[in-house]
Length: 190
Image (cartoon, rainbow, N blue to C red; front, top):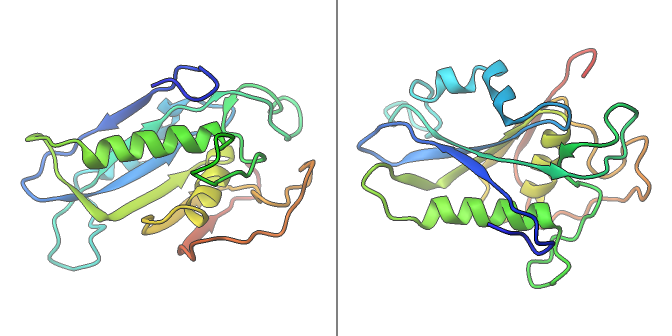
């Protein structure tokens, strides 16, 4: 997939075997580490064990979608001011605007592709699309979920404030279009 800037974008889709529809977990990597850093989270090990259905007798497991960020400027301290990541500072989420944030465009594309592709290999519970991420990916996950219908909830680790971080060149008061449940976990350092 090429975004509206002409940049090639990619994603990895990890399927958990199940005869029943499973939730989809979209995980966004941080700006200093690639998508393979998901291996540090425990999410891969839980992909066939966790119950994200909201019922005690629901099927176990979830599918994982790992979109890849792009090389972009970040308004974080050095060395995290450049590199692969997500642009959560350009806050255009208007899907009908040609100037839509290209990271939002890429996420929309990959999520829609996974949700609408007919396959004998997997089924997705479309009412259970979850977002998660780490650091810059966490900020993007929070912002995306607050501005995108159909996201069940968000749980992220070490998210900078996607609207008013201390280096933000254009701090804003958020006016989310969706009141998505969010859980943010922090440590003493990122």
